[in-house]
Amino acid sequence: MNLRSRIVLALASFVLLLPAACAPGTPSSGPSADTSSAAATPTAPESASPEPSPTPSAGPLTLTSSADAAIPAAPVTFTVENGTVSTASVTTADGTAVEGSYSEKGWVPASPLEFNTEYKLTAQLSDGSSRDATFKTVNPTGSQANFQVLYLFDGVGVGMPAYVKFSNSVPEAYRAQIEKNAFVTTDPVQEGSWGWLSDTELLWRPKEYWKPGTKVSIHYAWDGVQASDSTFLRKNLDASFSVADTARIIKVDIAGHTTTVEENGEVVQTFPSTTGKEGFTTRSGTKLILEKNESRQMNSETINIPRGSGESYDLNVRYAMRVTWTGEFIHAAPWSVGSQGKENVSHGCVGLSTDNAGWLFARSEVGDVVEFTGSDRQMEPDEGIAVWMFSWDEWKARSAAQS
Image (cartoon, rainbow, N blue to C red; front, side, top):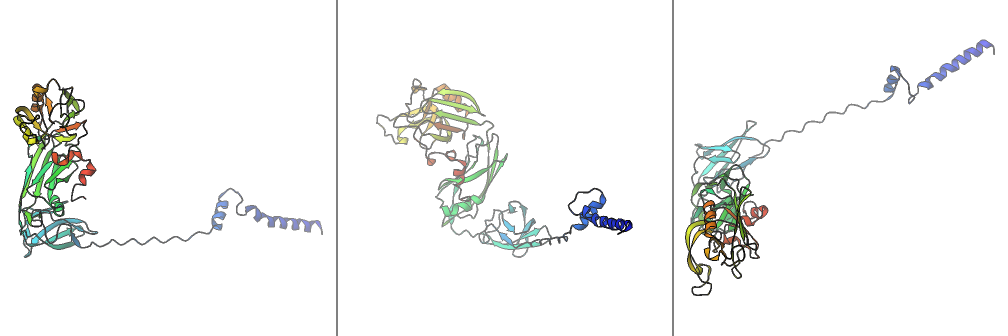
C-alpha cells in the first residue's frame, strides 16, 4: 500500500471514532450537548385534567323542631341539606303571611301562633330556589302545670343562677323540651347550661362565676310545653336580672375558725369565727347567700332539736344570712366571741361578733358565693342552690337536652 492510501485509510478511521466522544452520559459544554440530550429523552404525554365534581343539589327542608307538636311561641328550626338558606317565612293554610323573622335561631314568630293549627314554612335558598314543609302546633288538652321564676333582682352576687321552681315533679321524659324552649341571653356573652338540681328545680349557670355587671335575659316560650303525662305549661314569660359590679367570695375555713372576704380577687377582711360543734358539724361545699334578714328569730325546733332539750334555743339574732335550706346561716353571735377564732361551738351556723357580722351583712348580696372548707360533712344538692358543687362537665350532664 502506498503512502497516499495509508493517509486516506487513517482519516476514515478517525472520522468513524468521533461519535463515541458525544455518547449519552458524557459531560460536555455548549448548547449542542443540551439539545442532543433533550432530543434523546422521551417525553411523557400530558395528563388529562380531571373533570370537576358536580355541585350536589340542595335537598328537602327538614324540620328540627317538632313537625306535629310545635310550640306556639318558640322558634321553628330546620335544615336544608347542601343548601344555604337566605331567609324564611311562614303562612297559614290559606296562604296568609304570619308575622315573624328569620335568624340563626330559625324562624321566630312575632307573637305566639295559634294552638292546634297547621302552618307552612318556606325557606328561600341562595341559589334562588325554595323549599317548604308543613307543621302543626301542639294541642294542650291536659291541666296546667305551674312554675315560679325566682331571684329576679338587680345586683345579685356572681354565683346566682337563673332559677325556675316547678310546683310539681317534672318527669325526665319532658325535661328536654322544657329546656329547649327557654332561651338565655347574657351581656357580656358567657358560656352556660341548663341543669336539673332536682325534679322540680331547673337552673341555668355559667361555666364559671358570672362576670361582674352581667345582664341576663331569659325568654320562657312555655305556653303549650308538656310537663308531665297529664299537664302542660300554659305561660310565656320574659324575665331578667343583673349581677353586681363586685365579685364577692366569702371563704369559711371550718377547721381554721376564720371567715375571709375577697372582692374582685383581693382579700379585704378576715374575721375570727366559729362554726358547728361535734354533732352539728357545718357542711363543706360551695353555697350561696339565699336570703338576708337584719334580725331573725331562730328556734331549735326548726332543725329538729326539741324544746326543753339541753341543746334547745329560741333567740333573736342580728345580721342573719341564710346559706342552706337546712338551717345554716352567717349571723352575729355575741355570746360566742370568746370562742371565735379558737373553737367550733355553734349548731352549724357561722358565728361572728356583732360588729363583724354587721360589716359583712351591709356589704353582701343575695347570690354571693360562700365557699366552706375544712369539715368531713359535705353539703347535699337539695340543701341549697348547689349548682357550684358540680364541675362544668358534671353540671352539663344534668341537662336533659345535652345528655
